[in-house]
Image (tube, rainbow, N blue to C red):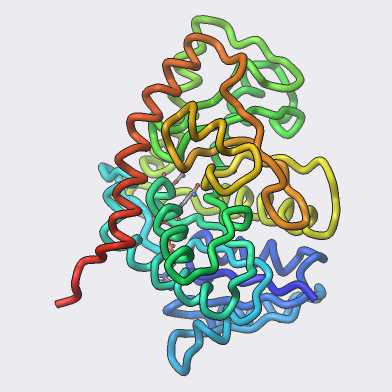
Length: 331
Ligand SMILES: NC(=O)C1=CN([C@@H]2O[C@H](COP(=O)(O)OP(=O)(O)OC[C@H]3O[C@@H](n4cnc5c(N)ncnc54)[C@H](O)[C@@H]3O)[C@@H](O)[C@H]2O)C=CC1
Ligand SMILES: O=C([O-])CC(=O)C(=O)O
């Protein structure tokens, strides 16, 4: 019996993500949690004639605990999205506390769950999650993931447009680093099957991957950020985690993980000086089976992009860790 939870299930990402999980034959039970509207969303989705049994919870009557209890996988797209002119870091003030409170519930009632954090700023919310789990004595780095799949999906799509492929899904494009602006680093030298990016298109393509989120925020013009492509990306990652948990081999996807706690991570932590970095993760029954060092054999241009990413990530990670230890006092 596989129980999946979506926290933030009534939102722009949460609703289509819940729909995709309801359609997934790997899910037997789907618990939808949000501070608003989950009775309606859950009842609506529950009428779909697929396997998963759907329930909806609000915070009242310990709804969070009931929703999360004994979950196998918890996906978190809870929190506010950007408006034009904002950076992801501008979301920290509100979303840091939301993520912290949700991870506390997870630690108490579902300490063995895979936890997939979508809420921004991912570069800081994942370190918060790790610190909360550590403090509760239940941290397993192999099961905590910052979801950066949308960067990979975008890179596949944009490279396919340039490389004359019919669809990006024919391509594997590693994207590493973090999940905001210049911390996002596409490694075009390792696209498989290989695609040559013309020199005169390289910088613009890197920029489009790094600022793909801004493209959507601008186009939505105040109505939020990427939701449908994010639901696709979040589901793609969750499905791989679930398939790997069932024993399927060869499933790899980049994710923002705690390097010192995952096999193969120490070497990358040493090379970057960072505890968290998005790297290609090979998934297994226990989550991260191993990570591969994405920095070997990259080009000089890519090295300089990685250096910029490392600088940005340092502050983002420290901000998350220090919030987890010293959250602002409530008035
Ligand atoms: N990792 C990534 O690649 C991406 C991350 N995001 C992030 O995902 C988050 C959600 O985005 P949207 O779905 O567009 O926002 P939204 O505002 O449409 O939905 C967020 C939902 O979270 C709920 N929520 C707020 N506090 C909560 C709490 N304490 N417990 C449970 N639910 C709570 C809200 O009621 C709302 O239904 C944002 O932070 C956004 O920046 C968005 C796109 C890509
Ligand atoms: O841009 C945003 O704020 C949402 C996001 O993370 C993305 O679309 O990559």
